[in-house]
Image (cartoon, rainbow, N blue to C red; front, top):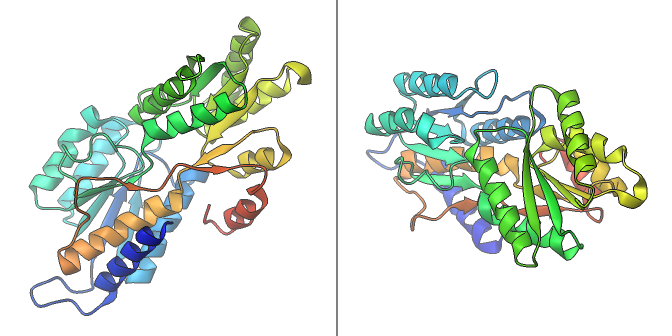
Length: 319
């Protein structure tokens, strides 16, 4: 985190933990977090850890909820139920603004402060959230594309494991722009999150049909695992460069060994922690980030050079 960002965090923590001012709510606050990712998922478990750590640090009750699968109808229902319970703040991810917008606007209309996290960097403001914490997805895709281009990639496959998630579409669009600057091209390949064997076969089939493909970008560990298996089946001299968004133990081991060139790190711990801090500061001191910008948590890059240190933090549930 930059010095400016660290300073902001110190101010917010002071606002949250100090004596509440007259007329401002006291310390017994409750925040509900509703995301499209389950806490059992390696990525979302870190988000959940961050949210609960903020609750412990600030003395706030934090509840984490998610649908059993990528189900926007069920997620909208969870947001509506959370709003009906009248929490002091609501944290939501917004993978599909059209499907979730009504529930989010209704919560805002009921006077519940909302902070969006992870996905929704292009939608949070118009839905009435007071802030967004996350990685600007298009810009992160551009950065990944430029990094792949710098390693010589000219024809890339963008593996989308969660069709319908607007944030993943923006990553692929950014990748296309990042490669286009040097004349590279991108093909998007949809795979099924629930069937990793079928995903591996689909990726392997696409690479066999297009042997000129020299780069593969997975959009998360759920896509990285079958992509890694598919790439391992190709002769070493012809293997495309493989990179991914987000971290998992398998991804980190593959980065450390050099099988994955890099992983784009959006720091999910902060995506859980900071929204709770922001809502606590808003409830207790009436403050919120200004200027309409995103509180950016990425992109950062985990490479072979720094993978070992990240692996240690991953074992602690922080990365």
